[in-house]
Image (cartoon, rainbow, N blue to C red; front, side, top):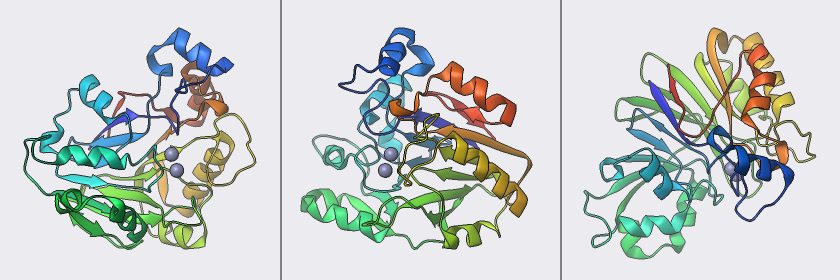
Length: 269
Ligand SMILES: [Zn+2]
Ligand SMILES: [Zn+2]
């Protein structure tokens, strides 16, 4: 399984769209891995998770051909993960491609589509997923697990398996609640891609994770037997408020056996 990180930032990106903070200035100066667009991954160029507002940039930068995209999983409806208006460009006249496009997500995600014009909804084959239920999508088994992220919406993290390797993509979530821990106790993971919005900074909100919590998560999943010695760990989804500069993140994470994702990184499992 090959996981291409199209984007690795939260909300406004790094540097932030309109931001002049110290971290954003350093990121602008250094460029390269410190430039982060809104988060999405593309598994084997087949299964895409999320449709961030930077998707057109991803198409240019990684020479993607999304006319061949058939399966789009959505974690939740925050705008850094789902740029709803872009779906309008699926329609004939804007795009020459086969329709419908299959989209998958929670019932709350599907409700968000109610505000889209009929033509757009007709261009989609929308599948409502129930948490902790396996779905066969192409050659993958996909299991949505409950994230702890929004009071007003059922948000998903995804377990994806190709029959050989199994990964967990944890965007976005805070510390899991009981139902998710219980489910994960019965799962074996070869890779965990954890969100790390808070980075080095211990911000008071609990609907995202930081480095401190990722270390606790790693310990807990190992103790539960969900991960093993060879399980790959990576962090992604950084906010500039968490001081996410690649060099500093790598220096912190490497001793803990955690890789630091950056835009354009391919994680081969
Ligand atoms: Zn996010
Ligand atoms: Zn979010």
